[in-house]
Image (cartoon, helix red, strand yellow):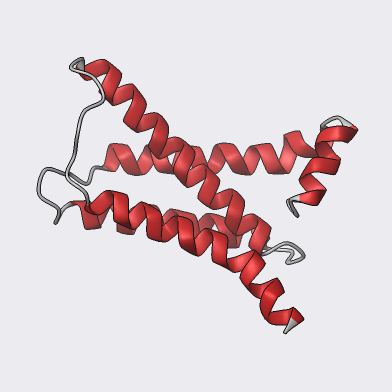
Length: 135
């Protein structure tokens, strides 16, 4: 039972985030502002953050695996690709290479944070990351 709970604790969060991304991509597009530039900024920031967060969760799931960052990158990248393809079939949505690049930038940014910034972080932040099983 303990192994099952450990598995669920590690792998359920990224799977739920993937389901949430799929659900949100299935919804009709909407605006947060009548200004195009503000909508663009908000929604592209969400792309960046959601796929960076997905990478973070996958990296957490594969903690202890020497290839955890590559596995997390590949799973997050392919989900971003599938998300954009999925949006091609949703009315009022569009799948774009630009969004794919923004998703990938988010993934790479979070990889950089985990790989180079977190090890040099203050002790309090490192302890917090250990409690969250990020390192």
